[in-house]
Image (cartoon, rainbow, N blue to C red; front, side, top):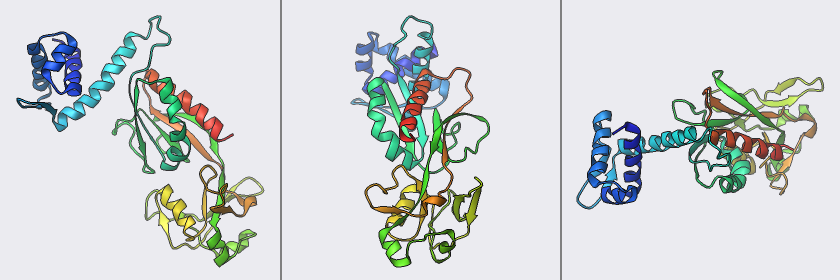
Length: 299
């Protein structure tokens, strides 16, 4: 039995939890199912399933192998239909994506139902973290970055720029006053944001009249590495933040914009993926949809 067919059988066993149900579902002998799983285990040198008289359950290695099987089988099916007449064949498989927490919460997740309505047979694993994940080592199809890209060995797809603003809570402004010019910042606090705690923040960032990015060193009692904590600290009155306008809570009055003539520069939004010769169709579809989403969000 070839390995690909054995993978198909194993994936169905993993989903149904039964050798007998798998044999009935695929129209093959139960012995064929058992032999396929045993072949894979011998080839991999690890046990994929715990077998009892009542049920079949995946081991930790079996679960990891099943997740990769789904992706490989979906890629193989996609490859077989690449030159067929089925121009509108449904997309299948799993799409694994990472993006910053605030972008996922405020922009992507509210519109995600429309993407899944277009492609109902897709499964999405969405990682939402401000940590810079390793796209290759951690097995992501693509990642979305706000700000600097970092890695140079990835394919970068620009999605647009998001405007930033300076915010403070009403309670903070009542206590410390509202700054009207840059010199007023000497009497204020800045909540510092650093992806790596221990890094030295540059301070209040703004674009000069000449179009250059400048910094004003500012005191602060709090440094965070998470966008939710950054926003909540501002709401709690711990200082001023500089954040994307999307989801900044200015519109509902929770936060107040200050120093509008001294905003920080816009943040570029970029989608990155590993340099693959044949990018899966499901990834290309997600890229095009993200272009639509970000175009509407940054308009």
